[in-house]
Image (cartoon, rainbow, N blue to C red; front, side, top):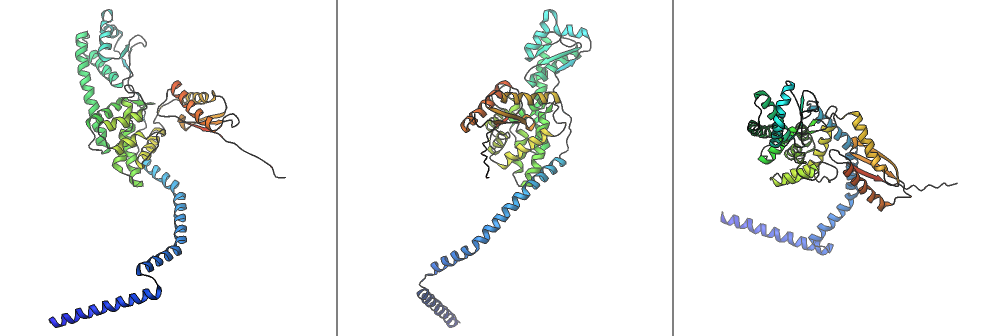
Amino acid sequence: MRKNEDEVEQLKNEIREIRGKQQEKLEKIAKLTKADAADKLMQMTERDIRNDLLGLINKLQNEAKDNAEEKAALIITSAMERMASEVTAERTITSLKLSDDEMKGRIIGKEGRNIQALQRATGVDIMVDDTPGYVVLSSFDPIRREVARQTMEMLMKDGRIHPGRIEEVVEKAQKQVEKEVIRAGEDAAREVGVIGIPKEILQLLGELKFRTSYGQNVLKHSTEMAHIAAIIAEEVGADVKIAKYAALVHDLGKALTHKVEGKHHHISGEVLRKYGAPEAVALAAEQHHDDVEATSVEALIVRTVDAISAARPGARNISAENFGERMRELENVANGFPGIDKSYAISAGREVRVFVKPQQIDDLSAIKLARDIANKIESTMQYPGTVKVNVIRETRAIEFAK
């Protein structure tokens, strides 16, 4: 048995020697080593199939371009159809109906001490003389306004209105509103299925329940966006969790715009980073308007669904007169600069296209003009989001061959 194994091993060695000698002979004949031969073969193959590969790539790129617009429209349409939410626009309540005119006197109190105590405790301006049978509450802070509204309702139900009682009721209303805010944030996160949101972010999210943008409730707008973002992200192969999370918290800065300077989407990004949200979420929220370049698919999805949610019929109750006036104001601001040929406000007032006279404005001046127009719009107009200023300079050289 051992002898047979030795014979087999000897045969193997002989075969290896024969193969080695054959390879040496082939290399001498071809004047190439095995590695050089492999390289030459690869180069020849690559040269032969390169043109075929380039043709295939070009064909695939053209097909992708042709199908991209149709596929994008299909994804957006299917997402909108699946997300059929209420189209009623809401307003934050800023006025309260009084049971009788006697109540107005009791709210004011002797020498105005009750109304002064109310204003001091809530930080809200209270106007009782403007509209008969109503009390008007005025404040830039929606949470303070809600505290004042609940305070007034409790005081009117109770009937006892004096400075000591006012302080007690305001404290009670503040605790109640704080609970409502946290509950609203938690409910919104639960509804869209995003877990692990820090408590500070949930609180700011809940505060959006008391904020409106053109009559559209900002928290409802955000939850609606999160649902649509999840559908689109699933279709295009993006990160569903990041897209949902970013869409839900994209307008977080609106809860702080009256306290912190800056545009609301920039504030959103800063706040999300501060309280420990993932960087991808902070970036996508920060980039949901055109003044910041989108660096991820999720940011583009948030930008898209923001437009879908805000632009659908009934979402925002801006009147036709106000809308027309705002568009005219934007155009007038641009027309006020020298060298302007025509200007058009488009995209519901989110963009101004300015055509300049090429004889008067050169390329460098056009860049400066865009910045000057943007600065003037910022300083003279009030508007939500951002307005894109697009300065267009065109030179045409025309000759005739006769």
